[in-house]
Amino acid sequence: MTKFTVNNQPVEYRMDPATPLLFALRDASNLTGAKYGCGTGHCGACVVHVDDVARKACQIAIGSIEGSFVTTIEGLSHDRSHPIQAAFLAENVSQCGFCIPGMVMAAAALLKSSPRPSEDQIRAGITNICRCGVYPRLVEAIQRAGRIQRGDEQVASPRPGVDPADAARIVPALTPAP
Ligand code: FES
Ligand code: FES
Image 1 (cartoon, rainbow, N blue to C red):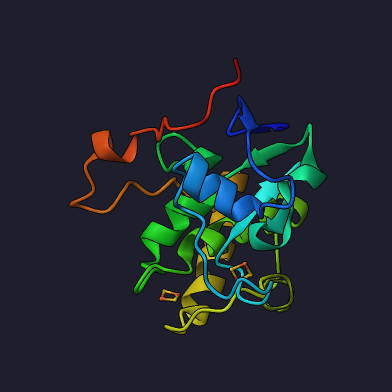
Image 2: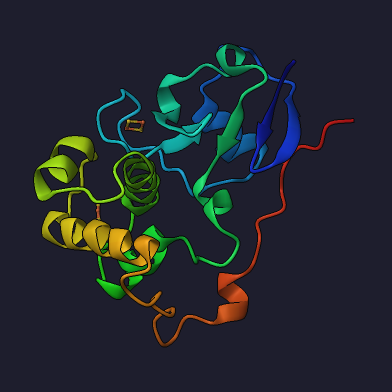
């Protein structure tokens, strides 16, 4: 059994300690935001935060992060109000959307360490692969998120068509600790 915290809830996985974190999150906790892309640590579709650091969940055995604090895209904010989420919506970054949860988590970590990132810092720091090629909008969105975070720009509202009640929905399906 492996115990750690996911999105502020204590969880206990009764799985092989060698199980990749991505599979534990998706299959046992029904947190399907992090995606399985390559499974080899190259694409970044599976990025989550482990102790506030962006990590590729397909490359982490759950047994190696006992006692850690994991945050997934579902736990980044309860209402999509994180500056990165607001800016991604405002800049219409997403195309097919498959890479976006990993992109958002990588970008949120970058913004935390570099509140005013240059284009070069963003291109060097975000190595996630997007088959749709959203990279120009990604750069714009991360810089806009920086302005939102610094208070230099008003937080963007969800796009028309996004029901705020739906946006605030919290995914509850974690395995509770006894
Ligand atoms: Fe983890 Fe591609 S699925 S890096
Ligand atoms: Fe389609 Fe990135 S938006 S893979």
